Image (tube, rainbow, N blue to C red; front, side):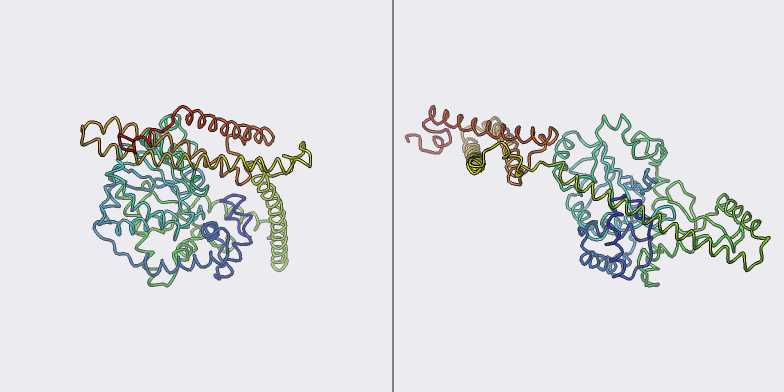
Length: 530
């Protein structure tokens, strides 16, 4: 059983049987690929057939696209421009890509080269490492002094997001956005919060107050966090940019040779590189044979001729040799055949104990995940269709009770639909007024334009909340603010609010219709003598 999947948490481990089936169909026997494959499985909502098809498309992309790129002068210069650089790992062992948005000046004619550069960076950041098989990275984005118009190419960003979802699912686990413009942050936060959880949970906007309070230190060590974001990593210099570029270029050069020349997939090549550096058995090795596989290479790592070079591990070798010497001292008094028999039995016993322990641990984990899923399905949302609503209502009146509730919902929906139509008519009327008013006096457009903007913002805010309430009630749920006060109180509060809104709208409608025989919109649309 693989233990690498534990790095992604108990939720991922609970789908290990689906992961094993995907690996069986693709004839993958390596456990080191588990976290990487899980990203595809999660992206396809744990559908085995679609996951296998998506992985096959990824393998085809590696051979037909990724390994065929040619490094141009523009791509090399882009890697050395300081827009992006790897600065280390976060506290969960994920590679950290630091992005300085201010330095990026996108040009539409260079989008294809930028896409290829990003593929190379993403492949490097999500590679298999000796110390981590998560194959994930996080993006730490510094938007200080960045302009939405000159430093952001929305078309390119959309293409990159689509490409990540298509060929690198789960690769970018988190995006920490810092020093965002206050106005843009105020608009972005509500938008991100309404996106699907698989997207909104990955995007974290760090406000100025949170940045000053050191919130990023919860996710990154001070030695990794750049100085500009409250850390101690002084990495934002041309020398480090050049070292970062050399690492990515060296990695891609070897990747290209392995995929085109050796016929390997990217992950198979990375695993082969790690296995060549794996320490042999301590029972048949000497101190010179023991080595420690390389850890994450960053701009602070020593440069070598090849990316996957051996790094000696004298401390680890000494410890393993001491253990071997202790076993030799115990076994030297026994005949060789008895020593081998004893070692085989000991190994068999340890394997059996480990298997039983892992099976028991998985059983506990599966029970925990099942309970948590059941709680997640029942606690966050309140079902107003449950029979608890009718316990205190006589059986004879329950049909009338349900009919009245549905009638109120339909009536409220009609009111809100009428409000949307009214808002559309009002907007069209004001736009026409602005257009014709410009011919009377050119400065009429300013006060009328401000009025139109205010009406649109207020109408959009009110109608979006109303639609949210209607959707929640149609699904038999309650709106989020009422979830925190419990099932009974939340249901009562929502129904009371619903009744108050209906009453207020009805009263306002009656008063307005009684006091205004001809509405302003109709009056403005009719001729002056009408």
